[in-house]
Length: 253
Image (tube, rainbow, N blue to C red; front, side, top):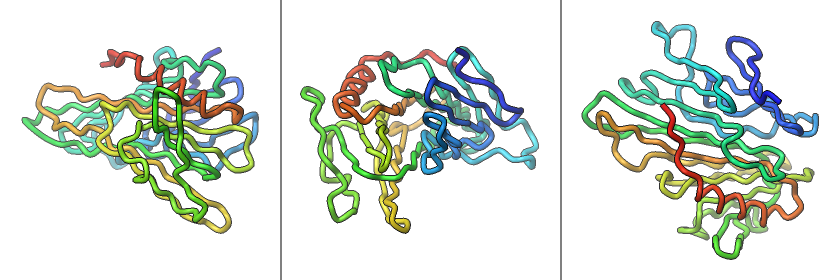
């Protein structure tokens, strides 16, 4: 099955057996959107967005290049997030073994510059409805702690120093969403939670590239999102985390 298909010159659709989503490379801050699971629209889900300025028709020079290669959708951005900084995003659909998961998509971000020194500002963001939210606390035994107490206020600092592996149970759904960032790649992770009517909404954000960017050096970071069936979701998320840690950094260009 072909995972990626171009819808038009702006949008590309990703399709698994039970999951589909759209990516608009010219607008990377939209991430995976127009998501459907088991044929049902999931308007509350927006996953693995990259906080880069979008490309518009007013851009004089070609500001982005995109292509499909195997299970990858690749987009290159010039002068983003800063002038004379080149960013590249791989949305990868078959780099991580799903092992029964509904979907697994890895975002690989890289930056390089012709400047002598700089500090790129690059972050990823996912937005979803919150039912229950957990963070992995121990890789060895797969223990999670609930980080949204009954008060409804998210408390990410309650497990400071824990692995960057998060699990969210979506209200009224029989599946959960896990997101993780490799410990070598995270400058910081945080989330906000707020009530919107009767719904509790969450935004999970990862700041990338703690190191300074030097001329001729490529910095690279990985964020993995996995949609899991609700049954045994904690054990599954912990298993995927362990496998993610063992995976080698991709040799992309």
